[in-house]
Image 1 (spheres, helix red, strand yellow):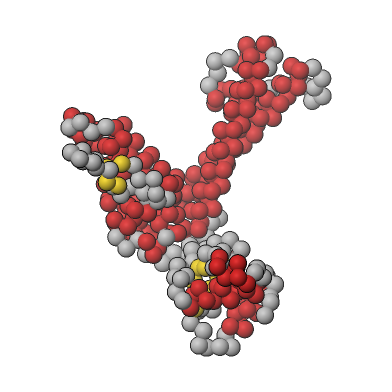
Image 2 (tube, rainbow, N blue to C red):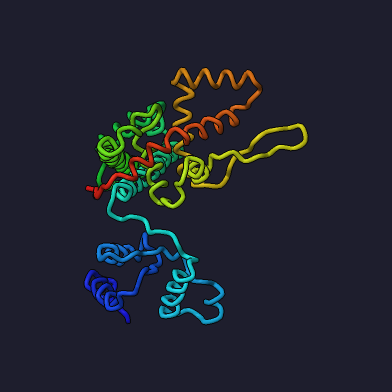
Length: 321
């Protein structure tokens, strides 16, 4: 049967499936995007939903591509247990953190691009403007440019550049407000639901949110702290040869989670006395800075894993506001 991708269509599909009580599982593609709506409806009705990553390529080559064939492929993947992953939750703490952090990250990228555009325009702009704003910090530069009152009908290159600079400066300030707003919402959620994680030295709203998002997206891979370390790409990879005994960078795993651990470690290396003593001791033993950072990231994964597990086991239905 075919149903529209609407709330009414989802309910119709649930009623149709309910005619067969022997149905144990339902395979759904793209449960985190296009299939999110029907996944929520099926879960609310008590059905076990399984994430189907993609149709079997051999079957697609042999039978072609239609919606009917894709539906059969999804069902076969669940029956054969080729698809076993649980879908991502779309209404809990992790999803709230995801949408807030994604918005914050995009605003950060746009703000960086905006200030780079301002500086490039000043470098190539008329000399009077270059001289007027030379040597100002980003904060003072954007505040000063946003407060200017250039002509609203620019004609000359100087007038047009001044007008464009004011527009860019106001965009920069608006993006800064959005970043501050998203950060405050992240901090509020995390202070309420993950105070122990927020209390760990070197953590912050952005890094804690990313670690919870990564862990929440992969609940089947959090069987132990070693599995979490592998998920974040901080488990040691042997790179020994002959009399040389060492480990190398792990390029696998979730790179955003790896980056979050890296930033926490960098903060500790700068300000935490215990970490600074450890770095000094390992340096005297002949370890390189990157090797020390890898050791610290692995220890950090060990420290944070039980705290992350406790947060994810909380029965929350938080939604992003």
